[in-house]
Length: 121
Image (tube, rainbow, N blue to C red; front, side, top):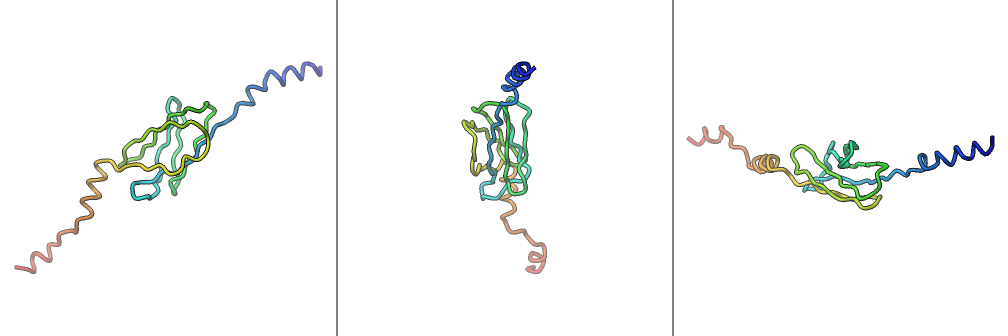
């Protein structure tokens, strides 16, 4: 009976011994502001996480390293990176997409007030 127990434990050891790999990081925009709900996807898998309110994420997988991750968020250009080992990826900066960049440029212009134009006549 004891030998059967040892054999069973050894047979299942590789399954339970699979290590999970984890990376963490922070997603920010070009101004250094955190991006909320950006998607961080481990390519060739269905593993997706989203950033929290402060732009932080933690992605865990049993897949061995040499990951390719994609980071995307509405209004920003999608970025892809290779991850070679676990740890902190630091801050990852997403560039503004063309639509968001145009919106930001247009919003920086002072609005034309119709009151000023009527009062000058």
